[in-house]
Image 1 (cartoon, helix red, strand yellow):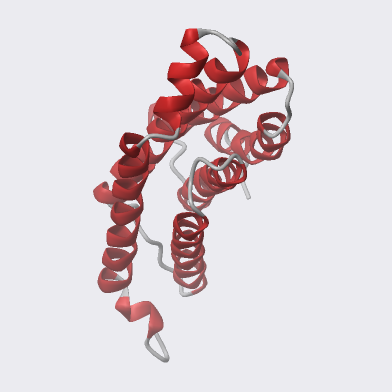
Image 2 (cartoon, rainbow, N blue to C red):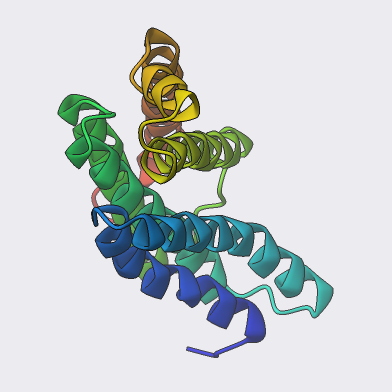
Length: 195
């Protein structure tokens, strides 16, 4: 694999994910702050690697495989954390994880057959909304912990565990299911024997 600058930026998300997970599950405000910053950086690299690849003509098949994989590792680690923090129900996490495993397996099959799957526009929207929601939840969680006992902390906690937050992640989960169905439908040939 050719290590281009874009690919290195992409790979950074794979290293950020476990550190983020450890920090966000800590009871330390400073560790939670680090987790928030790390996720924001990781989300930013999702745009940066694509920009670098186009800017320097470094668009590669490896990069096209690694980019969505790194996104999935980062977002799944965040969704697991949100479940463990009782912000998100387990069944939604399972659906998102299964969908991501399915599309990653399909990309591997495509790669083995000498083709590749292009990330659809709806899947890009899904990833953007997932990361936006995660940042929203992390900011509220940070406020609740950093200003413990204050009115801001109480309001952040109420919002974090409110119906609005639940509806937001439910909508994203439904979009995740939709994009998974669309991937399977548009790449049915990958499952045919001899393809």
